[in-house]
Length: 151
Image (tube, rainbow, N blue to C red; front, top):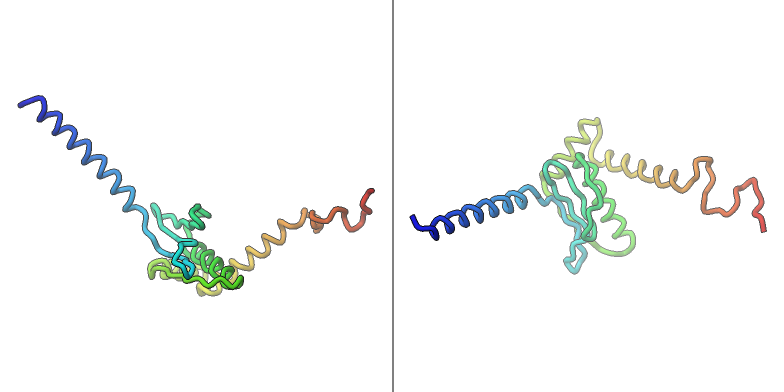
C-alpha cells in the first residue's frame, strides 16, 4: 500500500466525520413558527432545539422554555403588538407546536386561549410591579408622595 493512498483514506474519514457532525447539528433544530411583515422579512420565530422551545426576535434569541404554550403565547402577543401599532404581520406556526401547546394548557385544566389570557395578565402584573419600588411608589417620581422635593 502506498503512503499516498493511506493519507487520502485518512483525509476521507476526517471529512466524513466532520460532515456527520455538521449535519447532526443542523438536524437538531426544527423550525415551528414564523412572524413576517408584508415585505416578507422575518420578525420573530420559534424553533425547537434539543427538546427546548426557543423564541427568536430580530435575529436575537429572546428566550426559551420547555413550554410550547408559553412561546406560542409570546409570539402571538408580539403579533398583536405589531398589529396594534398599525403594522400588519403574518403569523404561521406548525400543527405540532399548536397541538403541544393545547395539550400543555389542557394539563392545567384550561384551553389554549385561557392559558394565553392568564399569561398576558401575569405579564401585565409583573410589568406593573417592576415600575414600583415595593412600597407602591413609582420610582420615576422625583419625590415620594408624602415628601417634598428639595430645591
